[in-house]
Length: 167
Image 1 (cartoon, rainbow, N blue to C red):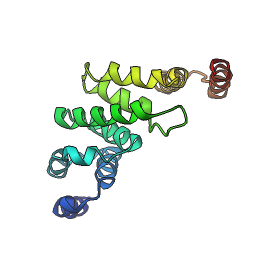
Image 2: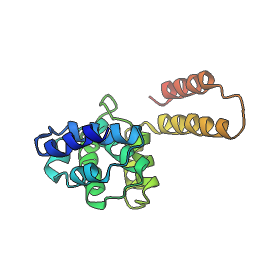
Image 3: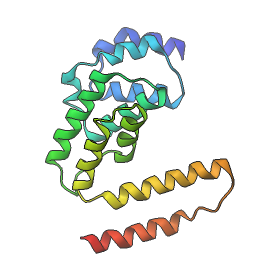
């Protein structure tokens, strides 16, 4: 991994916009906090963020939060681009991973970004999906503390029924 990181450091200036979020995500998933590589990626220009889609923004935010890396300029850029995309979105738009992005802002203590992003997603009519995903994730965390039965199928069925009612 150190050799891979060293090669990535040499070539970050040649990365395509999508390759930066993937790099963040990969290192965070493996719990590798390579400060030299991440420092290169942190200076990701605003212009790169403006070419990212919602999933790229979600993955980048999630990775930063998992690694505990608060980089305000990058988070502000993620929020700004997310705001633009969500402002143009409809219910049929690909919205990335809404819960991951909201969680990332919350986890990184970005109190001014988290509620704003939540509101934009909720305005698209996916509030029930956000709550359902949150309940499932909490259920998984609670199960780690002590074994309990979590009926995910039932939760998803209720979510699907409610989704049909609201539209």
